[in-house]
Length: 144
Image (cartoon, rainbow, N blue to C red):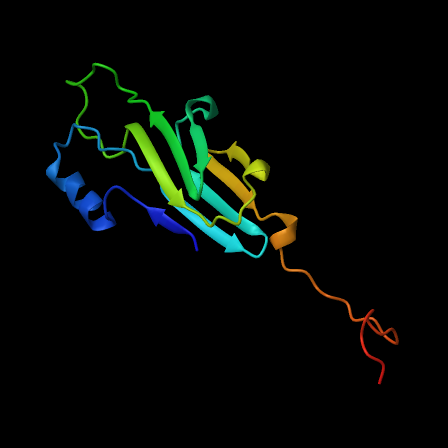
């Protein structure tokens, strides 16, 4: 089972946007999609404006953590800023994944502001088809 763990529930996160000042940048929480198949799991996370060197990805037991910082682009121009809706700042996203993934085979790539993590299952845990052999009794089986 794969579950997303967030610091705030979506309704609370969205309500905080309306309470904050219009010129104060909201906290950045990158949205993530998790796809689970028989071969493993794939995570797609939107991280626009973040360089790949500024991301840290860690797997400990069954917890996958992505940390980084989306820099505030306007510097000290507080007087010129009228409204800020996009989130900025440090973030940490935690995803709970199953323990049956191969931590040594995780692949990470980034394209057009989307981080993609592929977490494959070890070959021994992948479903495989068992072929039935004809006209050969199993060793140790009693003859009829």
